[in-house]
Amino acid sequence: MSSCWGNKVKISIFGESHGKGIGVVVDNLPAGEKIDMEQVLMHMGRRAPGKDKTATPRLEKDLPQILSGMLNDTTTGTPMCAVIENTNTRSGDYGNLLTAPRPGHGDYPGFIRYNGFNDIRGGGHFSGRLTAPIVFAGSVCRQILEKKGIKIASHIQSVGKVCDSMFNPLKIDEGLIDSLNKQSFPVIDPSSEPKMREYIENARMSQDSTGGVIECVATGVPAGIGSPMFGGVENLISSIMFGIPAVKGIEFGAGFAITEMLGSQANDQYAYDENGRVVTLSNNNGGITGGITNGMPILFRIAVKPTPSISKPQQTVDLTKHENTELVIHGRHDPCIVPRATVVAESALAIALINLL
Image (cartoon, rainbow, N blue to C red; front, side, top):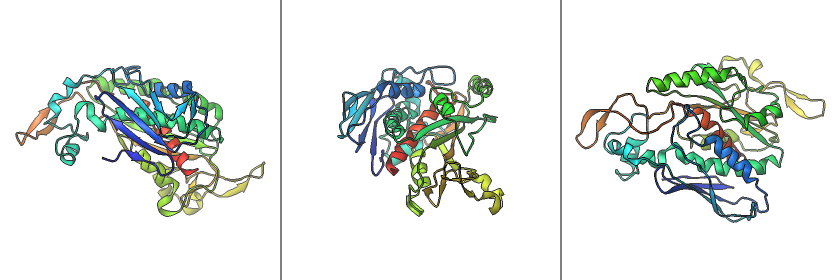
């Protein structure tokens, strides 16, 4: 099982959803970086469960215990290890999943891949609970990036068919970035939030779930970072984004809509701005051309599927009796992962970018 990622700054995620704890080792961080732990805890809190009806009622404080790599809130340059204790588990809710895998979840592939020895409790190592260590690592990385003038933000672009406004692809206001980074339900247009919440609540009351799209941006990334072909910026960002459970797609800039444009429309034409800086007049390529940053905002969207664990009866198989059966899932699950996943996407982007610099 590979839960390690990165070439320069490497992360290694460990633990299971209902084990004693989860955590991360972050290797090769620069020494001497002052880290504001209040900022780290703020971002951890944005991901933490149990805040409202859009999330699982499982209550976890998600307070990281830093075992190494930091002294007096300053990185030492040695591997940083942080552990997050699991305190609110109800493993008995998952007993029927040992032989009856959940549709849409990693239960059956995991059963086959690990010969039935995978930890099924709460989804084990396949659980979205494992994104908490990603947020910790990313929250440290993004503070280092901010000192270099790079800022990251995201918002809920859509829940089901309910949409928010989209980022201005050419220039993202710093005030908007700061505002979004403090929200647990980040949207650009405040009027979209109640509509999204209503959509999620309707799914929850129907014993169902819903997915959505997260739009993510990084500003201040200089031109000339990345490589063509297999070492491209899109490659690296996509790789870590697909490490987030439930992410099923990604598109940069105009994404698939660029296929409907003519070349004269799709091309991001160059110009000098009032400060003598080379900019593009559009950003259909999402700040990346030829696998290399062009100095414009890096802009992309990820597709997040509906939570697989729903209360509605579903058809599955009994792996012991080798027959079809009906499954009713118990336990506590998010009717929509998207709001809590925004900060996870931001954190993953921070880890990707620090590997590029």
